[in-house]
Length: 245
Image (cartoon, rainbow, N blue to C red; front, top):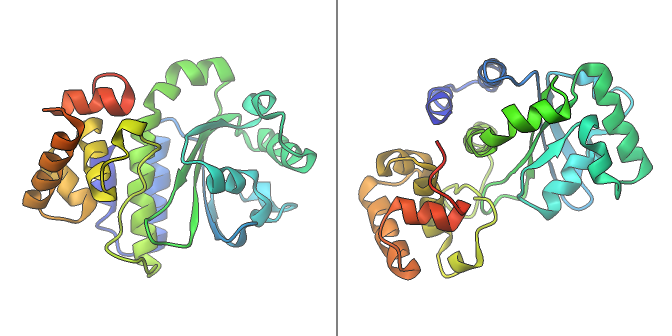
């Protein structure tokens, strides 16, 4: 999916980018796409883009329970009414909101938090399917990291087009890393994540907006700190396995 995101990053119109994202995800089995961002805690000033606006006719986007998850975690979470029994801790109004998704054909999905380093705005993508729980876990869930990388790249491009200001050149927020990676700088961790995902150093340079030589230096330093020598070992540290396909 990196190649799909790379093509879409060339678009300079938010509407065209959104249409491209929706069409790309639909070819991957995603029926509904919700992109929501906000600032503050509790969430305020939500910006919403969605293929299922009916979900929000009776609900304030600021109250979307997905935003509360984004405040507290970068973990991908299964979403939709089929997974509601797993989230019994949610208040009744949040449960009621999630149940309304069934009428829209949103039964299961990925909740993928996204954020740029140094940016106040946070949120993410809620990608919905019409699959039942068992089928979703079997067919879609193994692709979770591919969807995460796609969403991270698209979020960054949307923020760039919106003129979001950050403390420095935008950097992607990688998922929670093992404690063994705490010694790395943010950029080193980002590069290791990209390499562990299977991206080449050239591709990582493009994603991070830095030169190939700089990526190589970050990788060299990170490998030394971690006591590893290649991307396979990096993948085992990040994912507990070989690099995802």
